[in-house]
Image 1 (tube, helix red, strand yellow):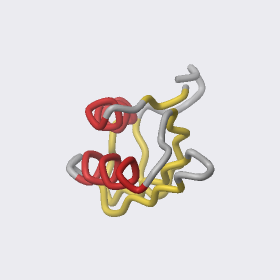
Image 2 (cartoon, one colour; image 1 turned 90 degrees about the vertical axis):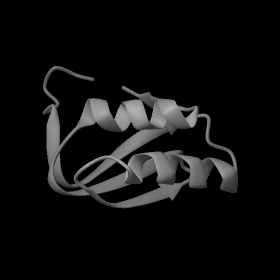
Image 3 (cartoon, one colour; image 1 turned 30 degrees about the vertical axis):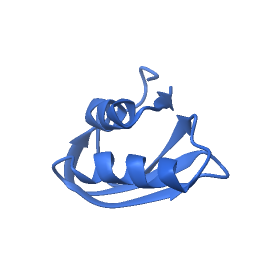
Image 4 (tube, one colour; image 1 turned 180 degrees about the horizontal axis):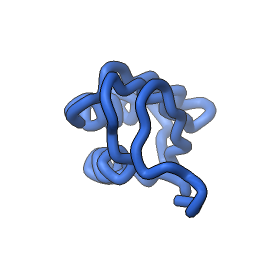
Amino acid sequence: MRSSTPRTFIGATTFVVKGMTCEHCRRAVTGEISAVDGVATVTVDVASGTVTVTADRPVDRADIAAAVHEAGYTVVA
C-alpha cells in the first residue's frame, strides 16, 4: 500500500485482485470479504480483476487484503 493511501476507508473503495478467473473465484472473494466487520457490499468483476467494497463504518484495508488472501488471492498494492 502506498504511504499516501489512508489505512481505513468508509464508502466505496476498489481493490485490484490478482488471480481471479472464474465464478468460483468471485464467490470465494465475495464470501471472505463480506465477513469483514463493517463491509456492507462486495462487487467482484472477474474480467477486470477488481473488487469494489462498500463499508458503512471504518474498515482497515489490511483486513480486506487478509480476507482476499484467505480466499486464495492477492490484493495488488
